[in-house]
Image (cartoon, rainbow, N blue to C red; front, top):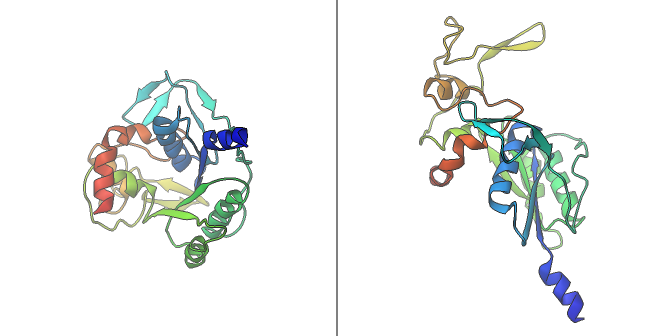
Length: 233
C-alpha cells in the first residue's frame, strides 16, 4: 500500500493542448510549454499535433519570429501517453472538443481545445459539449477572434479594432495570392494595415510572417506578462 501511494504521489499531471492548426499554434504552444514545463517533475504538458521544433542551441531569427538550425521531433512519453499524431476528423470546432474529451478518458488529466472562432458551423455545439462535466472533468476552450495572430498582436499593444482578415489576398485559379500588405510590394492592393492583421504587424515592425513552419514564440517570449494583462482587459 505504501509503495502504491508513493507511485501515485510521484505521477505527473498530464495536460494536452489540442490545436486547430498543424504549424502556427502547435509550434507556439510547444515552445511555451518547453519554456515553463520542459524539465518539470510534476507536469507533462504537450500539444496535439506535436510539431517539429528547433534544437535548444539553434540561432533565433527574431525578425520573423523563427529559429534557424536543425529541427527535432518532440517525443511523447510519460505514464499517461496517448496517440498524438492521430488525424482528428469531423466538423470544426466540435471535432477538437470531442477529441479533447476522448483523450481525457484515456488518462489525460486536463485538456484544452484551441481554435480560431471564425465562422465555424459547430461553434455553439462545441461550447455546449465542452461545458459538460463527465467523470468530474470538462474540456477547456481557448479561442481567438478573429485569429491567432490577433492574440500575438495584443502582446505588442492594446488594440480594440476589427480586422477583416489575417492576410489580404485574392484567389487566382483556385490559389490565394497574398498581397503582403505593409511591405509596399503591391501598392495598388496594399491595405496599409487597415484591413489585415499581418499588414498591421508589418507596418509597425512587429513581424513579417506568421504562417511559417517555424515558431512565432520568440516574438512574444519577453512580452508574455504584457500579453496576459492585455488579454485580461
